[in-house]
Image (cartoon, rainbow, N blue to C red; front, side, top):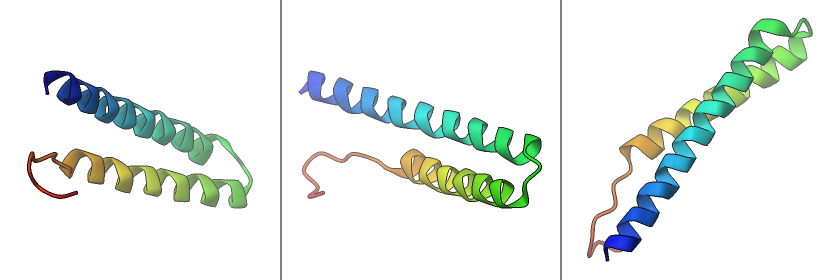
Length: 67
């Protein structure tokens, strides 16, 4: 059971790192790009990544609870 918990923790860590990297790339697009359409797309990607990050941080795995 310990290996499963370690694997789940590794998956959550990878997901959080991916969301943060995605947010950094989107912030770069917001501040550097001059085209308004590209800025809006980067802002949408940034907000979606922030929402997914908040969901991932609030998610808890409880043993015996059906997922």
